[in-house]
Length: 461
Image (tube, rainbow, N blue to C red; front, side, top):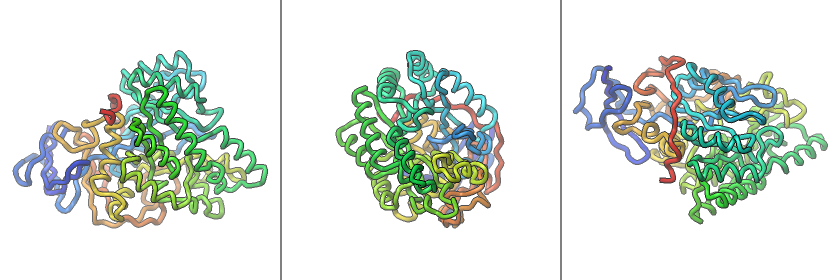
């Protein structure tokens, strides 16, 4: 194998910033050393650039069936776009259908992904049907490296679990070391509000945000926390969007409970103003939990600074405006829920560094290191240290770019951040030492990415 040296850059991890050369051998980081000490067959000049770990996006939905259609990114297009954006590992969600086993759902997702991914991937398991058989299968999946299970307090009739089912799954995860991830919204109450809104003729996309009330996110977050406390299990709340939900997490963490929260770029950078865009344009921004009024953003940034929120993932679940989002014209409840974002996360969070919301090390912590630790991939992923996979990004912090559907690589016909100017851009991306993006050219291939089994949550250690 050739030895590759990344020379002259500022190496940034969650814990350190140091001017060092990085030696890569056999797909792994072999050494870090003072500039000029090491030699190699191939040298990548990173002078004036950042050298950062590849991003770990712990929440994506490639090819997800939803509302009579499918997410528009395949594992091939979605992982290629992720690589372009400096993300080198995704954790996607395999789905158990009601009446079927976990194994059947997991096998179906393995079949979708295998041989198609540009970068490495893992799976969480969506648990839609809790019964004795499901609980036994959870133990087996943990042994196979699928160590996290998502449940929904939303979407009655599709993914919804009641409190009893949630409690039983949490009790099982307390025993087998798995981590329960929760979509915390009171779906039963929301369905009532949806029905009432439609009856009043309130059909535009903005009503999606109005019926999915922040208080119903906070209520479900509180309930999930207390159920986890009863079960003696840790809890990870996905896509936290409301300041009231952040307050519930902060309170639980102040009590010393092992409760964690994730937010997403859309909640940090977009708002109900987008949902209210005229001519049905607001449909582009329909996702659940929904975008909130702008004043929620400050509390989310604060939560990221105080570590009441630990992770920023994308919940990447793209649907084209034409032909997919349009299914909900005249009825907001039929708009497929989800936004594209897997390519934009690292850049948007770097913009947050530029804007003074977070530090450079915190950027790497919430986008690389903590998701890797939370989901059992550290230090293989999420850092630059001897022995780690050589998932490395050369990042130019000075270049300005304009985010646009014209130039992005996600398989979707709009950008949620169209026209937004950001500072910073991915230049070169290595996945296990192999160049996937080289000086802003795609040099990767489908099938390079492999399934990566995970240990149980390391963030509790």
